[in-house]
Image (cartoon, rainbow, N blue to C red; front, side, top):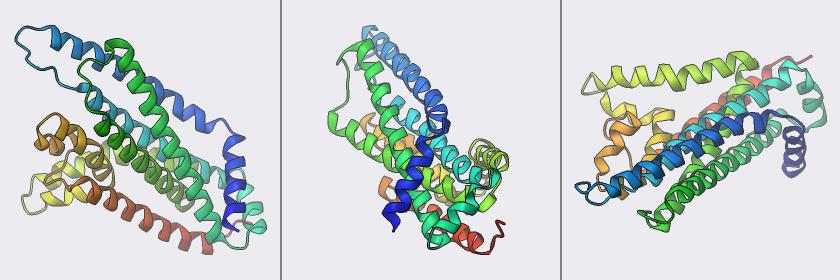
Length: 270
């Protein structure tokens, strides 16, 4: 049953331009960041007093994956909310055995799209960096693969979370603006306010966007030789280990799924 619903959702996604419209800017940014990191690393390596050049490819890769995660969240949110705007949700619910399985299929599909965003952005960014500087000053392949794997998981979770939020809001423009507002403005501001109060500062690590960025920046910080960089990079106090940060993001995704399921079951779509 779920497999059939997922196939239907995949066909819906493939039939629209949304998935690649959101992927293109993230991919372009990844290439630009990869080129910049390659040029900057070569410049550092050429400087007589620079010592060992920083392996910036892995740091720029983490940044590009953070951007891809936002794109994945937007895709999930706009895709599911669009069903309410275009009234296709009525047919979807009537053809399915229940609204819960529909939401699950939507979240799985958007998670797959998100993971694809992560892999595509990582491949393009690393390729751009390699073209600029060859294999010079590259971190070990194990670290690169780990960052890509973490990035794919983070992007998948954000895609699923966005899909749940789209069902919860049922309004394309509203959920897109709200999602961007939270990630770019509200959560950073809340993090600053929490960090200003010593007892509340550890809560910054439990916010969804912060958790995703913590997971992404943990390995690059270790490769750069300074694990303390994770906190400033992710905007958190007392960052969790990357498995814990992924678990926090998964928890937010599960919470959004539960809320969306409850709302979908009571919503009138006639």
